[in-house]
Amino acid sequence: MTGAEMVTWVNIGLLTMLCLSAAAILLVRHLFAVAALTGAFSLLSAGLLVALDAVDVAFTEAAVGAGISTVLMLGTLALTSRSEKIAPTFSPVAFVVVLVTGGALIYGTSDMPAFGDPNAPALQHVVPTYIEGSESDIAVPNIVTAVLASFRGYDTLGEVAVIFTAGIGVMFLLGLRREDEDDEGTVRRHRSRRDASAKKDGDAA
Amino acid sequence: MRHHLVLRVVSKILIPFILVFALYVQFHGDFGPGGGFQAGVLFASAFILYALVYGVEHAREVLPLKALRVLVPAGLLIYALTGFAGILLGGKFLDYDVLAATPTAGQHIGILVIEFGVGTTVAAVMVSIFYAYAGRTQDVDEEDW
Image (tube, rainbow over all chains, first blue to last red; front, side, top):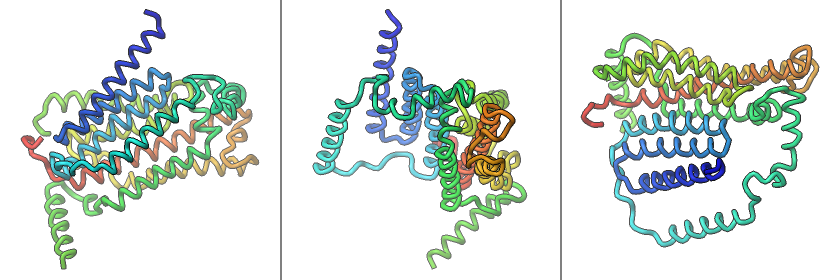
């Protein structure tokens, strides 16, 4: 078996498992299992990205998708119920919308350049400058880092600002309670519970 | 999770390695895969693992909210100030060429510093979000899982 054939089989295997886990996420009603399955889905996507030689993206997908997201999903699960409510009845309008959108997307792929085609329009504009520049101007072996941190430094600054904003937003919405900062666990837990119920009473009034 | 002996022992062994690996990914990002984003998430995951196994209260003693409140904006500020340093040294905003004697050395310093800023903000935000979720969670009985 040649290397290219092996990559094809690995891709087929990964995509099959990806489809199976997606179907399982749709069908399973037990949310703890769904959270675990989304983690598996992210890990499989990371594997697929490694097969596509996008190691940096795979790394992020594994760390954020399979790691942090799963933890946050489980954290959300602890706040809500353990099993999904029974889904609403079949809606023909939604079904048609999904079919048309999916069909349009699949039709759109027929116009796309072949995978890895060096003459693809996306690789014509600034990409040659970046590839040459990351060696001559920046002298960094990892082109992804050179593009991310230097050529596209403005964009990355914006991305960090987005993460900063997201963090601030979560802190405002969920709140990092100030009284949690002092003394010990037991006292604090009782007090914060009492605060929460007092707040609820206040809202009701 | 007070009685999960295996989890406690294994996580205690793993956490230092996770932290060192995060630092490797952080500062080796211009040579291998990785960079500030991935390193920040890895670094945060070590603290989240600690909080999951030993309890959020103990994690808050290691990395208190006060520190997070400083670290979240600090990373973004490090990044933005590196940009302004370029202006002050006679270049353009986020122009790393002027940060050192030669342009490539300047680029290396600039990338290292801004990646450090990215890692700081990402790690601090991830831990803050986890604290925000965990702070609202009632203790779950072992049987419920």
